[in-house]
Length: 308
Image (cartoon, rainbow, N blue to C red; front, side, top):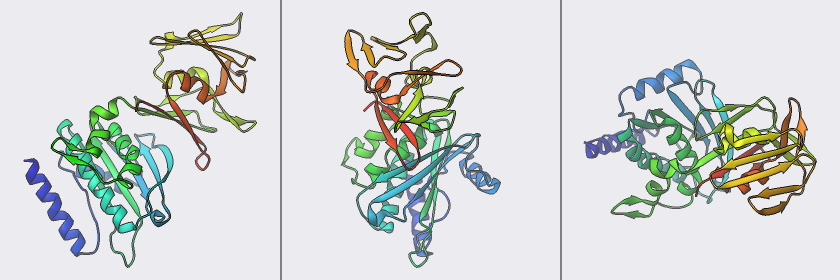
């Protein structure tokens, strides 16, 4: 059955290339996927409860830059990313993106999840934005797998073996289940995370003295800490965060962070804002819990990654 699907995909590719364009869906063998994607296109929305979408701009691949804009769910939750990739032609980049989607389709299809893409390959008048759609029970995880793998797929050919390829091994459902990517955006109350539904905060991240301050409580939740694992002591103005075998303590106005028995001196002290939220640059708590933090100046987003 899988071989027949791949033959069908190959036939679609041949027809598309002969016509000088790429149309429709690569995948769409999960019942309802093609119709759901077409309905999303017709609605004028970027995503809905059934379909997610990422727009990948390949117009600057020759300069080694790719950008993506991802929309998740009925709220059309948006995440912007800018990637540095190996310099290559649009044609080469599109070929790699297509191959990567096929690899992901083969991994996620058994779980009732689909991936599709559409764009134009007419090099006389190219449309350089590729639309990638995910549908089905693991559509969120599959979309994050695709976005997470853009740099890899545009920089490294898959290393194939009898068990699959490096793309499969790095972005399979099992591999992605151990990774959590969280995004805070300046001035917005919504946290997007691959670990589950978006989290709505009652305060917004802000910039002060060139540092991005995020609410510690909601940051902890996004990093997998339970509500019971975040404790506030009014008398001592201390926040305690507990996750597995790690305990972190922060005190308002103090640059000392205690991780278990280790003392860490921060370069900024936590501060309180209405309605009583402790704010601190994200990297101190994130790194103490084993995550890594990056800042995207263009999109004004803090991106936190857990897992390898």
